[in-house]
Length: 310
Length: 327
Image 1 (cartoon, chains in turn yellow, orange):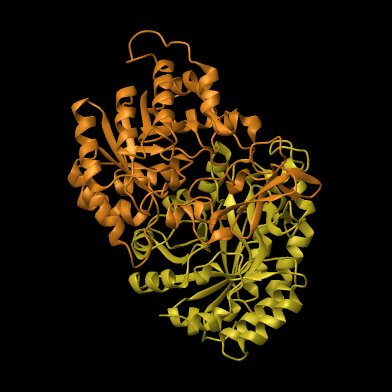
Image 2 (image 1 turned 90 degrees about the horizontal axis):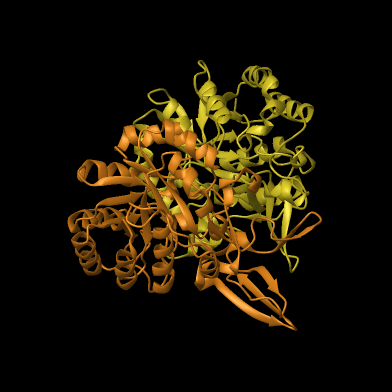
């Protein structure tokens, strides 16, 4: 277990389609080596992918719990057809393990039982958070596009709820019924042959002028940049945030968690920590614009915020 | 089925009423609604006038207060709800959970419709808003096939309304931060998608380049009309593909699906376009009214396909998610 001070570290669900053995081994290593408090498991993005890991989830959950991690199971973000409705109902009927609702149908199915709310549910103010809490939500991971001023106001306005923020990883920006990832590879969602497997860290989308812009992950569109709120951790702690969510990318996530832990515990200077991340996730461009109320792709220095007008 | 028509100005509102709308929807002139465009939407006085005009002709007025309340600035939204209720709105179109709770508690007598921005795409989500806030109608996101709409309408505990004409969101509504990633302004927080304040065009040799914030959204040869850089309808490069990787610059036209939607039990059909001019509103409403069979009695009349095509952005239309092959 990690130290008792500082915000919890929560490893979010793998949002990409990773081959089953890679996926399992990733979590085994997290279970055995990573200093995180909680791990969220499950397929959030595309119901067609679920069979890849379904059989492994329980085994991985047991291993994570044995490693001292709390485990949550995440629901699907976009639930439209009968099969997806059934899957969500089955998940929410599970006992003995916490479920994280990534869509309000799951929240409804979990009502009056303790559960978590994922970052794709729209919670933009304290009133909305209190609506969810009145029906059993205990932990809410806030939407990635929220600026710090909103986060501060929400925490003030909704006491007793444990808030998390999306602190590391490519940002989920949109989800569609249509699969752009399959389409750029000459397929459609129904005939996709799981081509998103070929891009385990997302497929970059560039502008026609060659600027890196977005990334495709199946039916989900993500940021090209990797959000890093590492330098903002002191401000987030000050705001009363209870947890930092780290979203798995194809890099050393054990190392990423270690860096966040040391910064969160005040054992490492945030700017030195950011330099470590650059080494740990080679080639990544980092951003934190959303937190600073700017375009999400921008990287703003935390000092600029501290010195800015209040 | 009811025909629900957009109005961004008082003049367009009257036109929509005159052209045969069963209800007209509009919003206030600020970030409380998802079409927060400069110079668009109604003042309180204009809404009062609109409601009187519509009411005297037996047409309903729906007020869209469908962005998400800014933490610390909630009063802008709650006052909008209070004012719309006081002025006699027949329904409030809402998306934010906190605002839904507020409206249900303070104005239980005013119908609450769930905005498309809430992205309710399944029966359990709809159950939630019916149970928690007494929602009477849900506007369905544009991610569902006709078969899914039919199945959902059968099981839903309230009415359903679907978009049949106008702008088309490729992404699930209410869950898209693409604009704020590029510009800092978002549909959910500011009521803006691909905001005009961040649009720029430049010439490069024979080409026109459109941009949004720091990013190029499209390049047009001199034989192409340079369209507005709506982010999800731009040309990009991914893998070996260069082109419209999310969606072509098309408009939704689901007139061909009207019979199927009626058979599915859908309560209302909605036209997008509060940002469009009076001519658009009146022509589209007139044509849609014909397609729905005049005042409800008598057979539907032939619709002028060419006219609707010309009214569409980019001159091309799609049935969008209604047909499974779109996916």
